[in-house]
Length: 184
Image 1 (cartoon, rainbow, N blue to C red):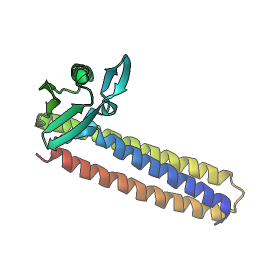
Image 2 (tube, rainbow, N blue to C red):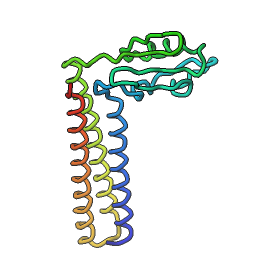
Image 3 (spheres, rainbow, N blue to C red):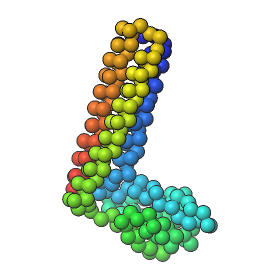
Image 4 (cartoon, rainbow, N blue to C red):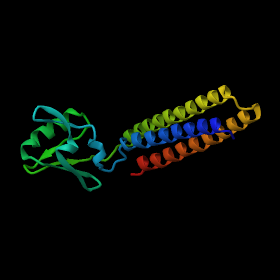
């Protein structure tokens, strides 16, 4: 395999790996019924007039599978953190005990679990599309290269095998997430 085709193949592989990483990051945001600090990732708190991520003004912990505790570094922030959580519209009802904020994560209903599986499936399909686009781009680059026809055909076969491997990986990730969501 010549150097140009090697570079094209490596770029396609990198792009496909990025698609997998993005999928895993997006699936972390889909809660599976267990309390997780990542659930509050998008919460912004008004801190001295500046919207600041919750994790930069407090410690967020999960003492058990159903509870999230938020310990602010300054007690004056308790009400701002409450507002931020309510404003984020996550469906949580924060409780302020004067020292920290406690959030009880309600168990998921069967209907909500099915919605979350659909959401995970949509993210999975996006990852597959991204992987296929990387394949298409690589094949187009290979066709433009100065390589022999045989080298181009072999490179396209290699790119297809790479694509198949990454698509299978995406399917495996989805199956694991689906099982996690549907497990009561």
